[in-house]
Length: 159
Image (cartoon, rainbow, N blue to C red):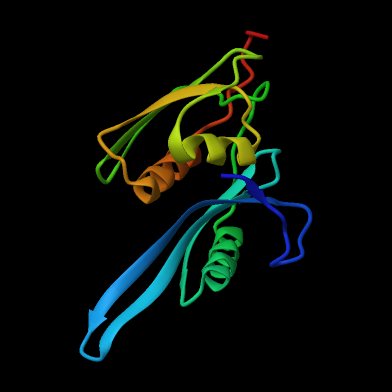
């Protein structure tokens, strides 16, 4: 997916990326109704990131709602040399997600929505794996849960 321009909210300080757009149809007595759901991640590429899911009758409306939700859900992650401070293993619903820090210059060696979330958050070097789930929404919320568990390293005698 390509990064979106900020034409919906007019806010230039955050970069936004649409991770997923789904067309959802529902059978009703009068026929079927069609809705769209959009999964969006926003971040400042300096450690702040938020994710949101929005639903609407049209795609732009769903994206706008998702961006609004993502801004409310923003949080800060600790970064050390453009990577995460330590390993994390997360179980969220059916997904098992493993993220590990990587040395400078290694890049993002993760797949699916994890790469987009980490790049928008400002993580440039990390490796990881998603196990047991192919649902992108579940994987995205699992990564967010893992990133919220990150703790900054304490400054001990090791420098």
